[in-house]
Image (tube, rainbow, N blue to C red; front, side, top):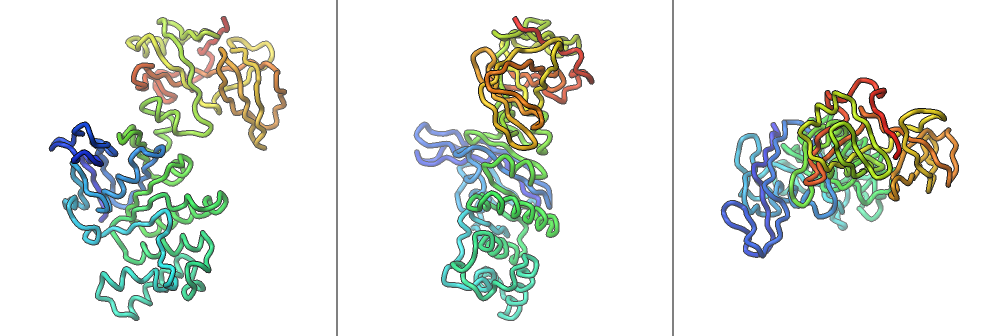
Length: 390
């Protein structure tokens, strides 16, 4: 079993901590605030967010490397909040691998077993060799860390965690020191290992691509607070707020300030007529909204098409299969992702469409989502989405 639960987890640094409710006393720094997440046995959960959002602090609290200011951490229904790290049945993989330079790979992998179990030396060796075979590094067992590449060191660090057969793996940005190609390879290998072992895993990263491709679910943090937890596609298609919408997806979502008049959205460069269904859906929405549209959902209209926004091209980034067009709308630059076979020139003006089924709308005050691309109110076709330039 590896059912992990965080209930109202709060961590305050300095200032004497906080009061019993977890509130900051005014002098401390709140790194994690009232965080609650439930994690199923065998789940791969990714904590993701920008630097300083509290994800690594959360992981260290789970591991017992940091004392919590308030809240409860449970594993399989057992309160482990105040237990020492060695009593929690967890294994951690650090960003810098933390290998012992004077030990061979064999001893690095087996060290934890040697000091925490009653296994004989031969039993430890057998377990280490089994893990080395699993990680495809048996030929490295007698080498030392300085003789290994970054990817090999990463496998050794994983082996040291796996060999203990813990209830939970904790991984703190384990791929950040690798080059892009190796990072992609190791990402796949870690996913396969976790699936084969079935061990619950909490994985911390600032890279939203890693989060989207690796996690069964992702938890997005900002400023120490949980913004949303869900499957990668839920967070992509149904972001809870503008922060999540802008953080998940690459290139980032475009945001345009608009005013909701009841039957249309007004931007200083265009007006956007709404379908009857969406008008009804937004009946109680605030007047000041932010329209969000992902670059990959912006369409280039053909000559003579109706309901378009006129946008000059400032920069073109050819990526091969795709090209990124940086377009100016109302004095602000936005990004559109188009087929790489289309040919445009810098300075050329293009007509773009924002399909109603694909737009997101957020309250400008607070950023909460009032419409996303999976809302039932969005029509099945894009014909009802009408955009007209002023």
